[in-house]
Length: 321
Image (cartoon, rainbow, N blue to C red; front, side, top):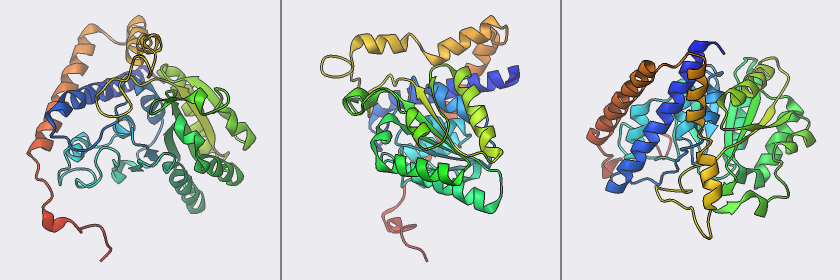
């Protein structure tokens, strides 16, 4: 990537972090009624992948999809309004945090069903191939989704048909509080790809340059008609599985493990890299922060002042006319 792209990726990562920190701070007031799943600490995955996608490419997210929505260019105002379940939300107040959508930029939806988005993304990739366009689909999912049958069925079908889809596993090692090694034999999700006849890679999900490099190659491979790729990104969420609570301590995630991953903050690492190259100056860093804080303030004002759906609208959008 050229230096302007580096700054774009940095801004995206910082935007994800600051938006989610604001959500974390606002949640205690109980105005955000939807359950939330924060991806603080995992920003490099979505930013590193989506920088290589076009507006008309597709992505599918999970219950923890704020980062993907933001990185793909989703409307921040509509996202925050959706968290407040307002009529101006991206799903008109009916989906909440776990069902973000913005078709105008290729965000066709996120799903709270673990592994449920994988066959959906495989389907859009099939559609792209049948239509003869060069759109690429990226499906984001966690390590828990690799336990599901839909993961294996989709990879097999995508490889068989050489579909233009990139499967991105955000492996933060935990399905709620169940560690990967208590559910799977070995730390090797990426190796499943090899059995289905596609490339599979395990990368440092907190190194945005490494994520970007592998994502660029996988997306280019799709556009050339060479089929799917699986990228397993090793990363770590700083907050608990759901809400704003922490789950670090005896019986949950070990404190030593948590401290290690916090020390490998993806934003801090990338900022240090950019500063060492003379790309990110103190003045530019402050300017980016000011811009983001203004955007966030505007989004929350918009959401909090937007109308709620009325009871007589309960059945709207449930049945076709």
